[in-house]
Image 1: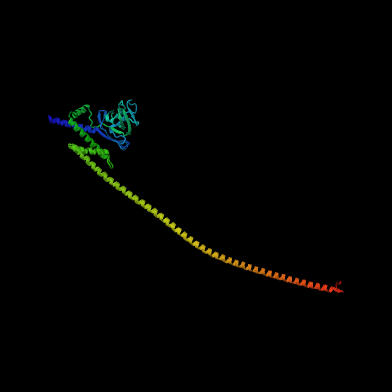
Image 2: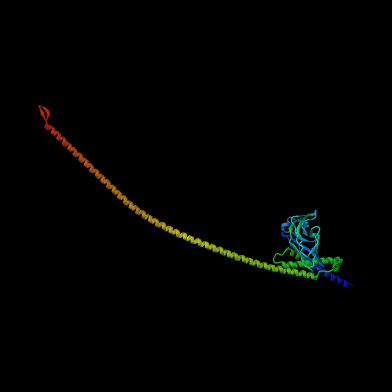
Length: 399
């Protein structure tokens, strides 16, 4: 009797594990300020009804922008809204204008009376749809200093929840109740279930994060899950779970080694590209320097030739100037000599004329004096002959 009960219990426990594993989802979202939020929720599908139950153990890690301003995480809430505005008068929501849950067509949803939800309060959402659907829930980080006061300071990525019928879902409510009774009937089994569920969830999330990782360093979410699984590997004894943990840890190390090799190859390629670029730049600079040096050399040669020709021209000009000066001086000396000779000739001629004039004047004076003397003597002689002394007196004779 004990063996069948044990087998039935094990069967129901296995069904419970399969159900919870397939319906429990853990999502990691980030805000525009690099804040990280890990949200865990259950999706229960019964007939056309989907029940989404959020866990209150939401993880929050603020980025560098908000961590200094909001140090007390107990006052940081994760919120979403199913309407905008018209909240209770005792509730104050400020900081940002929130967006409400996106309800697609064909999905029935009864809006709440408050209009907002805080995930730490374990809210439950119920949707009805006959087919597949997807719900987008905008999440916000809010500072909650006191009751009824919420200040939104950062918006997260939309939480995307798919409403898809699953083959592993429990279709009848009685089966669900039975399963809950089995799980909750023994506290030890429930505790073991909780640890196993969390471990399986962590394995599933780590598997997805490892597959999504494409570069180092790994995301903090993956590092948290790996650390958690390493701790659980020391605490758990179930072989299947331990095998799953070992497999995930091996995949983690393989992916880490692969990404390190990829990063090393990329770094080497980047370094080679940088070296090639540096060589090209150096070659370009050298070519420019050579061109500049050649231009300077050509310019210097032209300047040297120009200076040489200037020197030659200057010497030639000086020679011609000297020769011209000598010729000019020669002709000037000739002219000066000619002028001097003319002056001397003029002086000589003038002296000769003066001498002749003086001679003429002297001759003329002598002649005139002699003529005057002759005339005087003749006159005196005539006078002597014309006067006779009569009785001792001179008397003039008239002819």
